[in-house]
Length: 215
Image (tube, rainbow, N blue to C red; front, side, top):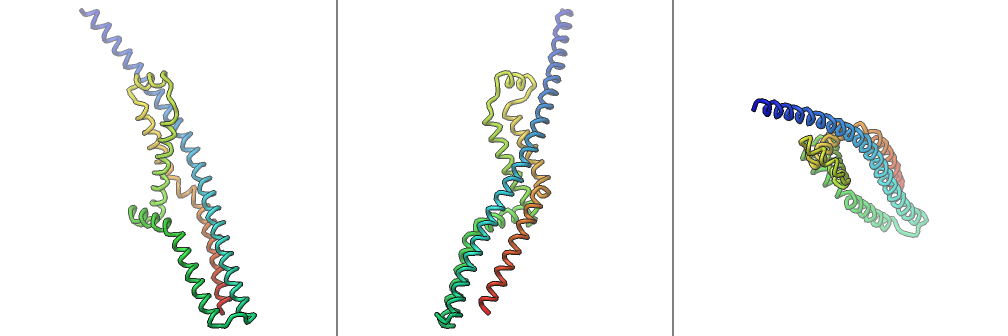
Protein backbone atom coordinates (compact mmCIF):
# COMPACT_ATOMS: atom_id res chain seq x y z
CA UNK A 1 0.00 0.00 0.00
CA UNK A 2 2.81 2.33 0.84
CA UNK A 3 4.52 1.68 -2.52
CA UNK A 4 1.25 2.46 -4.31
CA UNK A 5 0.99 5.78 -2.47
CA UNK A 6 4.61 6.60 -3.33
CA UNK A 7 3.98 5.81 -7.02
CA UNK A 8 0.80 7.89 -6.99
CA UNK A 9 2.63 10.79 -5.32
CA UNK A 10 5.43 10.59 -7.88
CA UNK A 11 2.97 10.55 -10.76
CA UNK A 12 1.09 13.48 -9.25
CA UNK A 13 4.28 15.46 -8.83
CA UNK A 14 5.29 14.63 -12.39
CA UNK A 15 1.94 15.74 -13.75
CA UNK A 16 2.10 18.97 -11.75
CA UNK A 17 5.61 19.73 -13.06
CA UNK A 18 4.50 18.86 -16.58
CA UNK A 19 1.51 21.15 -16.31
CA UNK A 20 3.65 24.01 -15.01
CA UNK A 21 6.05 23.46 -17.89
CA UNK A 22 3.18 23.57 -20.38
CA UNK A 23 1.74 26.67 -18.68
CA UNK A 24 5.09 28.46 -19.00
CA UNK A 25 5.28 27.52 -22.67
CA UNK A 26 1.73 28.69 -23.35
CA UNK A 27 2.34 31.93 -21.44
CA UNK A 28 5.50 32.62 -23.45
CA UNK A 29 3.61 32.01 -26.69
CA UNK A 30 0.80 34.31 -25.52
CA UNK A 31 3.25 37.11 -24.72
CA UNK A 32 4.85 36.73 -28.15
CA UNK A 33 1.44 36.72 -29.83
CA UNK A 34 0.43 39.83 -27.88
CA UNK A 35 3.62 41.69 -28.83
CA UNK A 36 3.33 40.73 -32.51
CA UNK A 37 -0.37 41.61 -32.62
CA UNK A 38 0.25 44.93 -30.85
CA UNK A 39 2.95 45.93 -33.36
CA UNK A 40 0.75 45.00 -36.32
CA UNK A 41 -2.26 46.71 -34.76
CA UNK A 42 -0.39 49.99 -34.22
CA UNK A 43 0.80 49.90 -37.83
CA UNK A 44 -2.76 49.22 -39.00
CA UNK A 45 -4.22 52.01 -36.85
CA UNK A 46 -1.69 54.50 -38.27
CA UNK A 47 -2.33 53.33 -41.82
CA UNK A 48 -6.10 53.52 -41.45
CA UNK A 49 -5.88 56.96 -39.81
CA UNK A 50 -3.63 58.25 -42.60
CA UNK A 51 -5.94 56.89 -45.32
CA UNK A 52 -9.08 58.21 -43.62
CA UNK A 53 -7.67 61.70 -43.02
CA UNK A 54 -6.24 61.91 -46.54
CA UNK A 55 -9.60 60.99 -48.07
CA UNK A 56 -11.45 63.33 -45.72
CA UNK A 57 -9.18 66.24 -46.59
CA UNK A 58 -9.46 65.47 -50.29
CA UNK A 59 -13.27 65.52 -50.10
CA UNK A 60 -13.15 68.70 -48.01
CA UNK A 61 -10.81 70.39 -50.51
CA UNK A 62 -12.96 69.38 -53.49
CA UNK A 63 -16.15 70.59 -51.80
CA UNK A 64 -14.49 73.87 -50.82
CA UNK A 65 -13.21 74.38 -54.34
CA UNK A 66 -16.68 73.77 -55.79
CA UNK A 67 -18.16 76.31 -53.37
CA UNK A 68 -15.60 78.92 -54.40
CA UNK A 69 -16.29 78.27 -58.08
CA UNK A 70 -20.04 78.75 -57.56
CA UNK A 71 -19.50 81.96 -55.58
CA UNK A 72 -16.98 83.14 -58.16
CA UNK A 73 -19.52 82.64 -60.95
CA UNK A 74 -22.11 84.63 -59.01
CA UNK A 75 -19.55 87.38 -58.35
CA UNK A 76 -18.65 87.49 -62.05
CA UNK A 77 -22.30 87.71 -63.08
CA UNK A 78 -22.82 90.58 -60.67
CA UNK A 79 -19.72 92.55 -61.62
CA UNK A 80 -20.44 92.15 -65.33
CA UNK A 81 -23.88 93.58 -64.52
CA UNK A 82 -25.72 90.49 -65.73
CA UNK A 83 -27.66 90.39 -62.45
CA UNK A 84 -28.76 93.17 -60.13
CA UNK A 85 -27.31 93.72 -56.68
CA UNK A 86 -30.51 92.61 -54.94
CA UNK A 87 -30.66 89.39 -56.93
CA UNK A 88 -26.94 88.79 -56.30
CA UNK A 89 -27.40 89.25 -52.54
CA UNK A 90 -30.46 86.98 -52.49
CA UNK A 91 -28.90 84.19 -54.53
CA UNK A 92 -25.64 84.38 -52.60
CA UNK A 93 -27.48 84.19 -49.27
CA UNK A 94 -29.46 81.16 -50.44
CA UNK A 95 -26.31 79.48 -51.77
CA UNK A 96 -24.41 80.05 -48.53
CA UNK A 97 -27.35 78.67 -46.54
CA UNK A 98 -27.40 75.58 -48.78
CA UNK A 99 -23.65 75.17 -48.28
CA UNK A 100 -24.15 75.30 -44.51
CA UNK A 101 -27.00 72.77 -44.61
CA UNK A 102 -24.94 70.46 -46.78
CA UNK A 103 -21.96 70.66 -44.40
CA UNK A 104 -24.15 69.92 -41.38
CA UNK A 105 -25.77 66.98 -43.17
CA UNK A 106 -22.41 65.48 -44.12
CA UNK A 107 -20.89 66.08 -40.69
CA UNK A 108 -23.88 65.05 -38.58
CA UNK A 109 -23.01 61.31 -38.22
CA UNK A 110 -19.50 62.22 -37.02
CA UNK A 111 -20.79 64.96 -34.74
CA UNK A 112 -23.34 62.61 -33.19
CA UNK A 113 -20.79 59.81 -32.70
CA UNK A 114 -18.25 62.23 -31.23
CA UNK A 115 -20.77 63.77 -28.84
CA UNK A 116 -21.94 60.33 -27.69
CA UNK A 117 -18.39 59.11 -27.02
CA UNK A 118 -17.36 62.34 -25.31
CA UNK A 119 -20.39 62.28 -23.02
CA UNK A 120 -19.68 58.63 -22.21
CA UNK A 121 -16.10 59.33 -21.10
CA UNK A 122 -16.58 62.66 -19.36
CA UNK A 123 -15.90 64.99 -22.28
CA UNK A 124 -12.23 64.04 -22.50
CA UNK A 125 -11.32 63.82 -26.21
CA UNK A 126 -8.08 61.89 -25.76
CA UNK A 127 -9.67 59.23 -23.59
CA UNK A 128 -12.74 58.98 -25.83
CA UNK A 129 -10.53 58.47 -28.88
CA UNK A 130 -8.42 55.87 -27.07
CA UNK A 131 -11.48 53.94 -25.88
CA UNK A 132 -13.05 53.91 -29.33
CA UNK A 133 -9.84 52.61 -30.91
CA UNK A 134 -9.32 50.04 -28.12
CA UNK A 135 -12.85 48.69 -28.58
CA UNK A 136 -12.33 48.43 -32.33
CA UNK A 137 -8.96 46.72 -31.85
CA UNK A 138 -10.45 44.21 -29.37
CA UNK A 139 -13.15 43.22 -31.85
CA UNK A 140 -10.73 42.92 -34.77
CA UNK A 141 -8.11 40.91 -32.88
CA UNK A 142 -10.73 38.57 -31.41
CA UNK A 143 -12.39 38.05 -34.79
CA UNK A 144 -9.09 37.33 -36.52
CA UNK A 145 -7.99 34.98 -33.74
CA UNK A 146 -11.26 33.04 -33.90
CA UNK A 147 -10.96 32.77 -37.67
CA UNK A 148 -7.53 31.12 -37.35
CA UNK A 149 -7.97 27.34 -37.09
CA UNK A 150 -6.20 25.58 -34.22
CA UNK A 151 -4.50 22.24 -34.72
CA UNK A 152 -5.45 19.25 -32.64
CA UNK A 153 -2.07 19.24 -30.91
CA UNK A 154 -2.53 22.91 -29.92
CA UNK A 155 -5.91 22.13 -28.38
CA UNK A 156 -4.41 19.19 -26.46
CA UNK A 157 -1.53 21.32 -25.13
CA UNK A 158 -3.93 24.04 -24.03
CA UNK A 159 -6.15 21.49 -22.33
CA UNK A 160 -3.20 19.94 -20.49
CA UNK A 161 -2.08 23.44 -19.47
CA UNK A 162 -5.53 24.08 -18.01
CA UNK A 163 -6.51 26.72 -20.56
CA UNK A 164 -9.06 26.98 -23.35
CA UNK A 165 -8.64 28.17 -26.89
CA UNK A 166 -11.35 30.81 -26.47
CA UNK A 167 -9.85 31.98 -23.19
CA UNK A 168 -6.45 32.50 -24.82
CA UNK A 169 -8.10 34.49 -27.64
CA UNK A 170 -9.89 36.72 -25.15
CA UNK A 171 -6.72 37.27 -23.14
CA UNK A 172 -4.71 38.23 -26.23
CA UNK A 173 -7.45 40.54 -27.56
CA UNK A 174 -7.80 42.22 -24.16
CA UNK A 175 -4.04 42.75 -23.81
CA UNK A 176 -3.67 44.15 -27.33
CA UNK A 177 -6.65 46.47 -26.80
CA UNK A 178 -5.02 47.75 -23.59
CA UNK A 179 -1.81 48.51 -25.50
CA UNK A 180 -3.83 50.30 -28.18
CA UNK A 181 -5.62 52.32 -25.49
CA UNK A 182 -2.29 53.49 -24.05
CA UNK A 183 -0.61 54.28 -27.39
CA UNK A 184 -3.48 55.64 -29.50
CA UNK A 185 -2.96 59.34 -28.79
CA UNK A 186 0.81 59.28 -29.42
CA UNK A 187 0.29 57.24 -32.60
CA UNK A 188 -2.47 59.40 -34.04
CA UNK A 189 -1.40 62.85 -32.84
CA UNK A 190 0.89 63.62 -35.84
CA UNK A 191 -1.89 62.69 -38.29
CA UNK A 192 -4.51 64.70 -36.41
CA UNK A 193 -2.30 67.77 -36.11
CA UNK A 194 -1.38 67.64 -39.80
CA UNK A 195 -5.01 67.22 -40.88
CA UNK A 196 -6.12 69.99 -38.52
CA UNK A 197 -3.54 72.44 -39.90
CA UNK A 198 -4.50 71.65 -43.51
CA UNK A 199 -8.23 72.02 -42.89
CA UNK A 200 -7.76 75.18 -40.84
CA UNK A 201 -5.65 76.74 -43.62
CA UNK A 202 -8.20 75.79 -46.26
CA UNK A 203 -11.06 77.09 -44.12
CA UNK A 204 -9.21 80.39 -43.64
CA UNK A 205 -8.67 80.74 -47.38
CA UNK A 206 -12.33 79.95 -48.01
CA UNK A 207 -13.50 82.46 -45.39
CA UNK A 208 -11.28 85.24 -46.76
CA UNK A 209 -12.51 84.47 -50.28
CA UNK A 210 -16.15 84.66 -49.19
CA UNK A 211 -15.55 88.00 -47.44
CA UNK A 212 -13.83 89.32 -50.55
CA UNK A 213 -16.62 88.15 -52.87
CA UNK A 214 -19.31 89.59 -50.63
CA UNK A 215 -17.55 92.95 -50.21
